[in-house]
Image (tube, rainbow, N blue to C red):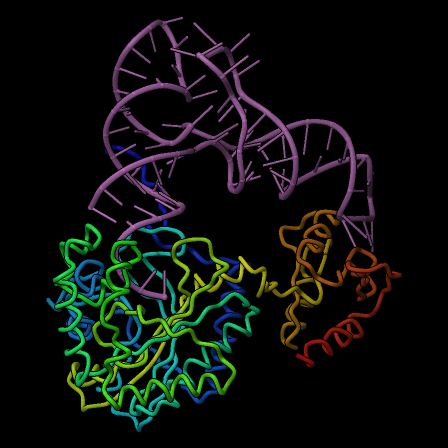
Length: 424
RNA sequence: GUGGGCGUAGCUCAGGUGGUUAGAGCGCCAGGUUGUGGCCCUGGAGGCCGGGGGUUCAAGUCCCCUCGUUCACCCCA
């Protein structure tokens, strides 16, 4: 590409969200906000970028998201910053900085950035809805958080959502397990898939997650973390599972569920949509991170949270033909063929009264203006021609049903539609 | 980071083995109806066929490069 003219385009892996799709986005956030409020969460906004150390320490340097997918940059003051690749670490950083009373329950909606190759359901900028609870390791919190996510998905009309759950143990029991797993893997090294035969030592737990038949075969004969949990973790996990069952939520125990970030302890879970054909069918996931606050320099504080991928959830809704959101239609659309002055005043008066009123511009023909009125989805057109202009009146024409046209004085016209505005 | 598919009008797409002024449907604009949308009819605007190079008398079509996009691996929401 040399002397070519520049045609601006959204960067690879990013997307513009425009009407009418953006109405659906608004509605999705509104649903989440509503449920989060019901569960006692308050909205938190954190910066879109943080000191890189927040992520390096928080997520662990070996996490791919950190090691090779972060958008890192230096600002003009020489600070090393990174666009956030996920939502938890920034909220934890804010918690440490402000020390709100616990349990601290926060929800957020924010973009995340990862330098990955875009593909179905995977973007360089995606948007997450999520919650975090800091300051309690009560298993009931785990249950509530998972139940909340479930409720959210159900409320969108999603049927084909699968919930898997596992426990990652804690500092007391996981190291011993990882050692046991390593020992086991080392004796079966040659039977692993090509990739893990080379790299299993970097992160033995990852091998559990591998879908290749070779690895599955090996690991299915190996030690299982759930069976080697310490007493506390084991009790905790059973309480979570019991609580979910009690609430009527079916969670599938998946001993292979190992999530990507270092900070997870105990409960981990993932929601996936079986309606999605693409490889990326995880629509939400999360877990407990009882060591994270301390890792980032705060007092020992347990925490748990989850994130939901908005783009993927909407794709899942598409696949299930659910959560179809229509944009709003004007209550009335003004057509004025006498120069537009009457439309200008009437539309302003209606909007002052809270009525969604629209009009045509550019002094087009009545036919053209009515065509725009029809397309706008408005129920009624308010027409002003020479006759109406002279008598200070407006003709109402129904656009969605058959009805006799009627001509009202401007005052009557305004009060008829103002009632609509007051109601909403 | 690795590998495959695809780039033609605002959108969805046609354009056998290269061959005149590049087409359709939808959308948009105007008219048919000098005060009336939707249905119908007529007309119109809108394309450096992603970009660059090459082969050829001749390239939307063939070859190379490049950019973009898409799908998969990896990883994740």
